Length: 314
Ligand code: TUI
Image: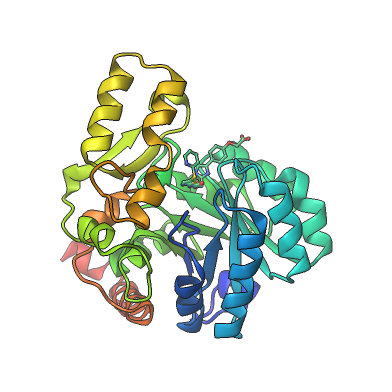
């Protein structure tokens, strides 16, 4: 299947993996790339040398393209920005900020730069400063989110820029993928569904929490701090939201959430930890391999796109 995104990135299928903190490590990234998508290492808030080692591990497992996601609020972002150049990484996605100050360095190194954006304004700015494509991430996504839904964000960004747009947020099956292409996207980014794969190294408790999640289990904490984060409802989100409603200070709230993602992903503490996941968690009901996830999404999507509008009006 060829789109502007498969051609830009040299991949078989227009599916890229989200750069999820603590989750997107080399086993997962290599498996997604081997299956024909674009695997991504999530640098998150990790030290730069950890990222270098992850890059080398992916290269040991696949010769196919892969990328690194740089979380711009990380205190190591400057170092990681240099390491992707040193290690000859071909694709960089960014999140939680504007990567403008790194653009010249990356473009000169021939890196394909794909900022993840949650607003039309940032999308336009990114195109002006040389981005090759964009991920338009709706508020259905897990982790740090913006306000607009995928349904309204993707077409607005598609209309506002000339570079190809990858849709993200709430896409976990072929129906969501087909819808994304109808909105004008040339590719999709999938996060939560890849958390629950055989190759994903997250704790079994984390996978189980996603598998049993219902629609109403998705909660957003941190709206009052300016850094809203979506995850699954648990004791931590209950306490956080209670204290937030009481007007707790930023420091108090940060203390409550500190280290929570690591505790959930690594130790399996899904009670007091932070179980970041998108709203699509409620649609994920079985654990498959990364290859099976990609194959199923593509099969469902191509069948739906072939049927076109016929079915809708019958
Ligand atoms: O970045 C993400 N998802 C993330 S980052 C993360 S680690 C974190 N945890 C808690 C608080 C903050 C970060 C977990 N999940 N997705 C891409 C994304 N970027 N979503 C929203 C944004 C965004 C938000 C504001 C991008 C830029 C922005 O403002 C930039 C500017 O300077 O205008």
